[in-house]
Length: 620
Image (cartoon, rainbow, N blue to C red):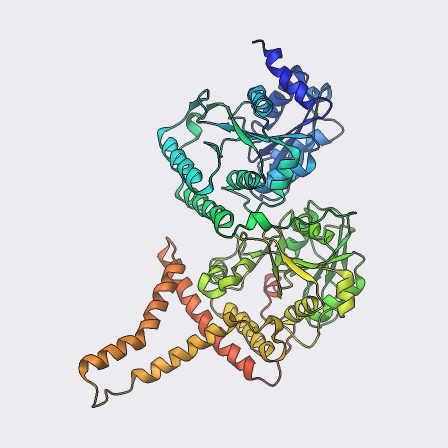
């Protein structure tokens, strides 16, 4: 069959519409332009109406500058002569993973068919006719390239074949997908089905392809396969253990959500916004610091463009991160507490939504874009997301983040500190990453000013008590610098625990949860066990019975120690032991301070500068 005849099925299926080819790129500066040229030339020669959507996923090797040239007035000469093909680059300023890159590309695309194609072109797009033939002949919604298709030609290292076979076996048995391969980097979608799946996605990285296809199948999509030709060559070496582990965790999470929680069956997709709202970002801080610079710089890199920032320092201040940006205003407040600063920010806000973020945090590039979409639902008053510990934090600060992320410390609230998990409604969320409708804030009178910390707990209480929803989305990410173990971490934690105990008696609706009492019960057990350990053996008790009683008394402590060591596990022995010690110290500190707050007649309300990292970072 002649080449043109094979491509006729592509031209006829696309018709007067457009095929969008979304190409994620990461650290491909050396080949990005040549790869784009090859793909554009292919579709141009065969008369296929196509748009190429290359997405740079936060590369730092110059890939972004190459893509930016296609959006400028003087793109490469070859690109100006294209008749059937257009190039629509997307640049993500920070690396967000393959899932985030593909979603950004999809949002920028317009075609009624969308092809996902890895930007390194290990799979050549000349195989496109086979994908469209499979789509048409099988009446499919999705066509997946498969290394196991009978007509595929694959050069594949033996160790990768073993891993691939094991993964395929797991997917077939536990996920139930009717295909033999999920990971090959070429897939063709009807636009509507891809959009439905992306709206429900949670995974950003290793199991992105699996979750995407699992959701689509659950939504009724018909999926078929097409052959591929792949030459992996020498660049595909041994898989790193960390990659295998992350892939396994993500895959098990998809299985749990699909088969156990059945999350994808009832996951709500927010209504479309009728317009693009202005977001006022409010940042309370003592003054300028390098952390504030980092926060403001990340704001200027948001994919959502309609925002303003109101920075609220004690006195006159500026920031290198603002870089003269007209969207950023500094409003001095005097030396007042965070709630008072934020209330002033609410009064100054011109936007329909107020986004609160701490100056010792900085947002992921899609922060506003992913959060704002929920405000299309009238009953959603607020949106929050995880505050992830930055990888660049100091060693003891990263260990503080590990402690917060520990299952025994945060339990059901780990979603506050770890990207991932499921969307959910919550009744309490911290102001380091919280977006609220401006009309809601003004209706409830903003923040209570007689508490710090804890003022955000009462704000959320007022929102929920008013009948509105607070939604958590794991993609609405900020990176929140932690206090280092042990002193600063425990002092901050102690303040939180004291106010939580104080609120349990006075504002119980979103504070009187059993999990908050557990550390105090643990401390009571330790105190009782320590006291009973010195009780002498009663005369009526035999040696064997006394030993059994002692063992029973120690059993909870032994089980606790084992769980702490298990949940703190790390390949680095020092990290393992220090994290375990941090978990124990956190439980004891929280337990004691919670009881103190529970019994207190009043709660102290402190100034923001106490133990605030922005001050030390600025050398103050």
